[in-house]
Image (cartoon, rainbow, N blue to C red):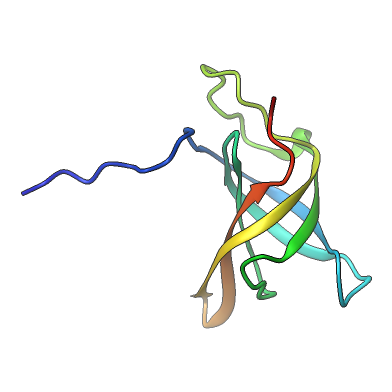
Amino acid sequence: MSKHHEKRNFSRHKVGGPITLHATIRTSRDINARLLNFSEQGICFSTDKQFIPGATILFKASKDNYLSADDDDGCQLRSIGLVTVKWCQESSQKDYPIHIIGANYMIPPY
């Protein structure tokens, strides 16, 4: 039996807290979402809105609202940034559809 190895370049930091999304096309309203984890490369969040891979989103977060992440590698959550959606999976929470979304930062950390 083979052991599953993570194929990520950067460690993920599990956190929890609200973020606000601003789609760059087709809407001017704020979209509420919940941050699930982050890394130096991007973020993972849940929301009731579906985004297609390739969509560009501006997100805003307040670091004060987050559970503390392990700072051993010096990775910090960005308070604002542009991300590109890489994947979107539909799920449900109490029979209510939600979307789990992974997105990469458009501007690298260094």
